[in-house]
Image 1 (tube, rainbow, N blue to C red):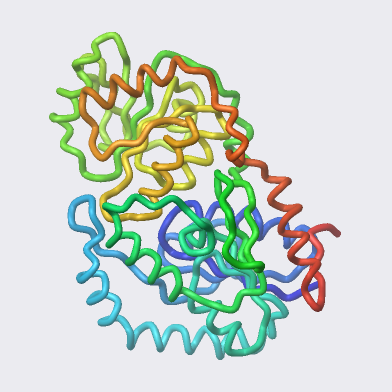
Image 2: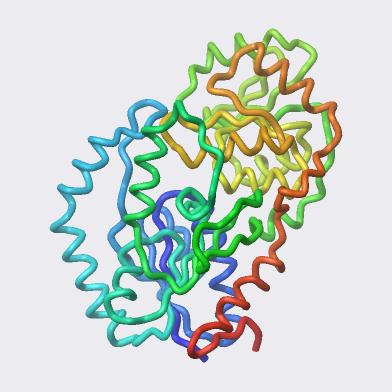
Length: 358
C-alpha cells in the first residue's frame, strides 16, 4: 500500500471528474489517498471522499465578458497571497508532513507539485494543459499573445515531474521523454449512455450570449430544433427550446443530439467524441487551450470551429452533420482502460512501484 496525495486544480469540471475516477481506482487497489482541492474541486471531491479531502489555496480567474481579464486575474491573486501562504503552510505542516506521502499526483494543481519537488517526493502530472508546452503543435499566428500567455502560465505551474501524462484527443510529437500521450477518459455516467441521433442540436452557452440575438440567429433555421442550456430557464420560442440546469436532462439531450454547439473545453469534447457527436466549437476569446482544441477538431473532421455563431456558421455545421464519421489515424478516441494501462506503466517506473490492482 502506498500513501498518495492527489491534488486537483480548482477551476474546470474535467479536473475533478477524472481525478474522482482515478483516485477511486487507487483507493480500490488498497492505497491510502489524500485529496487536495480548492474552490470547485474541493466541493466536488468532498461529496465522494469527505474527510480524505483537504483544502489548498487555488488560483482564480477574473472574466470580462467572455474573455479572461489577465490584469485583474493577476491583481486578484496577488492580493490573496497572505491568505494563500497561511492556508498552504497549514496544509503542509498539519497534513502533508505527518502523512509522509510516497507519491504526489497533480492534475494541474501547482502548490502540491512544488511541495513534492522541494521535498524530493516523486510526482506525476495528469492533465490536458501540458499539451500546449510539451507537444509540437500547429499554431495559428494571429493568436500569438494568447499562446505566449498560456505557455508561460503552464510552464510556471510546476516542473520536475517524473512523468507528464497528457490527456489529448489527437496525436502530436512530444518534446520531452518524460511526456506521454493518453486518451481522454469519461465519467461512468457517460459510458453508460445509449447514444442515438435525434433531430435536435444541443447548444450549451456559458459565456453570457445575448438570448434574443441567439433566438434570432437560430430562428432562421425553422426546420431545425435547438435545445439550449445555459440560460437557466424553461421556455420555447419557435424552434428554440430553452431548458433549466439539469445534469440528467443535459446528459439525455447530449446522448440523443444530432450535433453539439459549445465552447471548446476538453471535457465536453471528450464526451462528444465518446458518443460520436460532431461539434461546432466556439472557443472562448483569449483561452488558448480552447483555440487549439477547436483548431484540431476541425482539422481532424470531428466538427468545425468558428469565432462567432452566425447564420453562415450554423449552415456550414448542419452540412457537416451529413458527412461520414472521420477515420483519421491521428485521432485518439476516449478509452478509460487504455488510460489506466498508461498510468500503470508510469507507476511501474517509480523506485517503489504502485499498482492499480489489489
